[in-house]
Amino acid sequence: MGISIWQLLIILLIVLLLFGAKRLRTLGSDLGGAVKGFRSAMGDAKESEDEPAAEHVEHQQSGNTIEGEVTSKEASKNKT
Image (cartoon, rainbow, N blue to C red):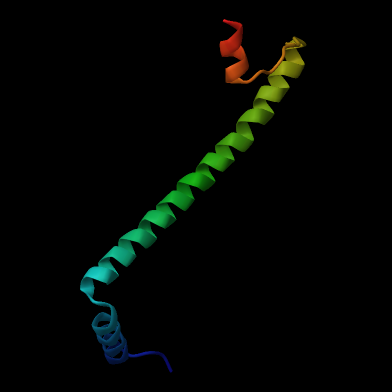
């Protein structure tokens, strides 16, 4: 009891008549761009999660501590 090829063609024809070919093309490209952006963001998130852990271990092994004060860019411009 699946959908036959004829039923799919009728549905496609109705959707094409309702939205038009140009709008469907832009909708498809927008959807593809969103999926591509999501995948790259997920890949960046995995890389950023892996890096701090390795960096943290490296600092613990070396035993070096760096102390300093965080200032804004405006404050550093005023000092010079």
